[in-house]
Image (cartoon, rainbow, N blue to C red):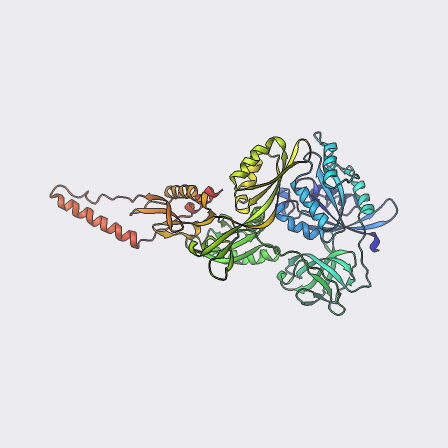
Length: 599
């Protein structure tokens, strides 16, 4: 019965005990047996378990027998906590009527907590606030209660639990049953479902994860994707348990999956409406915002013979991660590779690690870049977006360069405000606001260039705040900046893999560091090699790699000095010829030493 269905998510800042609370809910509803039970049971990936983070949203059905004698069907969607995966959170919340907001009793309200509250508000969800880790000796329950009451504008009914010990778990289950509204919908109406996620199965094709609002889905019926108009015949419908479990039908209010022989995951648009092709619904969802990569880098294999293996691995990987993007590129130094796009640095790190573990690839990763908007001087004022320094046009053709900015929210103890503000000033950040949420904790908001954030900013923030600052960000758009392309020339030839786009004021300092490092790591040649950095066709830094000098006069044992000069002149002419015709191979060690400067 639809009035006994509850669809909800668990949302929290990273490491506030979200997955542990999900474990207790599964355990107390007997969804998993004692033999199946383990910590973070919904985190199936080894990488998720090792790092203690959720990477992909998970769904699972729980049956709960309430104290009032009713049996409820709970559809729980466990969501990631890290800011790079906030897109997963927004998709999950759109399939729910309510959510459990978990707040650490020691850390209190943090940056991602605020972000999740705003997301839940946008989706008009009922929020059940829960203070977790009340068993810890340094828990500040009263203070955290005040913080939650402030961000939720007066919410008084706050639950106190210890997910680790199981304290308060039954109160959470009862709150879900009593406080989260049931879905609105009817089985008799035409099929109306929301596609909130998808995955690729090598045997069944692309599977779509759906939240049913109206109607029902049964095997054999034909369904239509509203945005593309594509039609498919349903081969299987099912629900989410620890593993997928087939069922005779999916009905209004339920959450489950549909298999329909879809060949490619990219034929599915997340946020699309699925309906009956014979009797379609007149309602439809506007869809989620398109996933746009914000951070780009190039991937190459250490062994160029493994290029085909890399290509096939990326094709397979993208089937299960639609937010990952790539296209082929070629570098004179590193050979054939791919330009890849990610949602953030953690996403980039996760993809790299999964490619290494799941596909056995030993990869070389270039320095990360962001997407820049270039406005040309021509009459039309044409705009282009680039993420690769090799695509940066000549300065004379450019009217304006704009770089992406983020709205950075930092929550921290008051005694670290000065240090953190000093760090932000060195990163070209613009101050927005500062307010205190209690006498000891403050919220600091800055406008920060994304390019400054992707170079070790999070590590530096944790360092200057001794680990107490929490950080969240949201993309706000583009702002004009004085950006330039810095080229590195070795023996007067530009090396594309070493080019950088950066703010003009930083170029001179970084250019000196780069040419000094290259002089140390590039092997000496038989001729002198100039190493230069160039901006706007002007050389701004230079070092000379001295040539080896062979003593061509060693065999002489006296005689006229003109014989000695003749041999030296011949050697000099030979070196000049080598300098013009000789090809200089730059070792990969030189390339990686430049990456270390970036870091």
